[in-house]
Image (cartoon, rainbow, N blue to C red; front, side, top):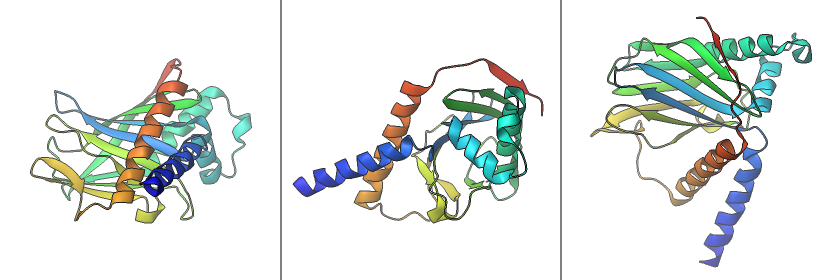
Length: 209
């Protein structure tokens, strides 16, 4: 029992440190009562900045105005998230709203997805294969809120989800292992606490499609 507690504490400390090193983001695909889909993304300001530096090496980030930086973040996200549903539907990110701060939030209207998801592939581009970045992803539709799925280098920054008996799960998922389950839940808790305590709403800027 003591070993388990020590393991949990070690895992918690490690994940807490990761949460403050801009290596964690959250992403939610949500459906409203009119069957419209929106994508919500939260990450640290430094997390977005490091990705922009990596993907736009010729740009001088410190020379960009706040408006230019926000537009670049929106463009980067729109160009580097792939949503493919039910084999032949592709989601497209449209208008993007952004709240800048130490914790930065984005919201996009998504078109092209069916009202009912049977399968969904989510792929994040723009990450190096040695990146330690983790994105905690979930789906909220009118019938169900999914479990959390972690998108990371171990799955090539791609997750494939299917709906079985009314519930979303990893495609081809078998039995869960104890430690991955515990680690995932601690990761989600730490991410949620970080967002609630650190995020301070700022003025929203809306960028056209």
